[in-house]
Image (cartoon, rainbow, N blue to C red):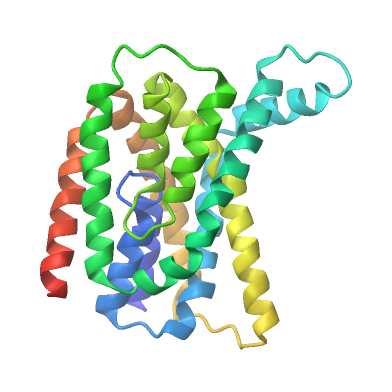
Length: 262
């Protein structure tokens, strides 16, 4: 049970810090010796509280975008929510580019070696992009959405941080740090919900029994509590531009995972 709760805590913390929650969960599940038959359903369950955290944290933005986007079909199309809504849709569509990698991801996620490589890749991205993105001019929000959506699709690879990739892509396209942070998490909602729905349908069609590890409910609660704290902390650290901490951490964990896999 304690291992299950630890996984919930890790999901909550790492989903919002640019350190790859999927990579950390894969490593911990590997070292805890969890059976593969429990992992998919449990991983889906752990994403419910983290999506809820995003909706609560950004509730004002979510409501405004929904109202202004739907309102744009009938009246004013000059409001920011109209363009932002389309940007989220475009980013989500571009994320689908990562679907062909799904089978490969399932095969690689169980290997600490590949997860470690993904974490090192994340570390390098967070180290290099802030340096080359300085002074870049802003691009249109739809162009930004295309690039950030592709980055989110690439982040399905084990150990590659979704938030890290999307925020870095936003910075590279000229968004401010605060806007890149906000856009990164807003586009994660439809992407995570869509991916979860596909996995849920796959489980349903397989006809296999849905088994969850002991303490799954406590893990969900832990993911929500620690997730909200992590998102608050991430916002402060990221807006302060202190990417070095995350980059160093990913590099250390990545190298450790590779060494332990040999």
